[in-house]
Image (tube, rainbow, N blue to C red; front, side):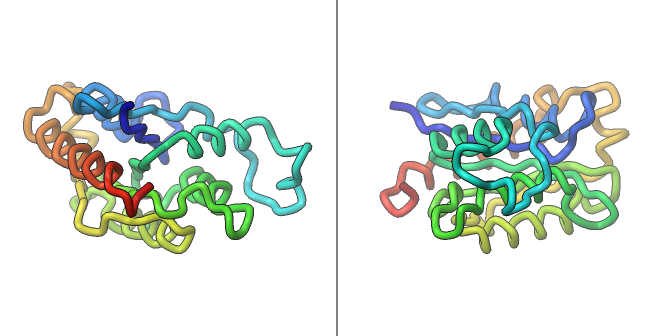
Length: 187
């Protein structure tokens, strides 16, 4: 049985470098692990307790929660928008944190990585994502970080999977997450 890692990307743009980074993670997953790139964050309405009602949940939110329930761990890819976490990623965390007391993130190891155009690679947004996941009950791997600066120039002609340095760093992140997902406290 393999470890299931659910990847959520905080950018909706088709050519997003964070999406490319997530695609690289899918390819770099070690034997015994599967990284599933979740599709459909754009279809999930903003979290609203009035629509989070059994029997009438938005289909996109149901798909997200089902994928999260199957996951042993989470790998979040966050760009930085105006110095913070993108709304689409925060919204996914909000949906996964509910219903209260039954968070799909609860106790599951989570790593947050990403790339951004700025010189710090989106570190502020990634810190905010770690904070939100931790409050939502996820087991945030605080020491597992990868913030790649200068995405627009670094990945202008090269996919992240073909950048040897990035591929090695991302592989290390996935292996660490994989190791934590297999521990009894993370299940």
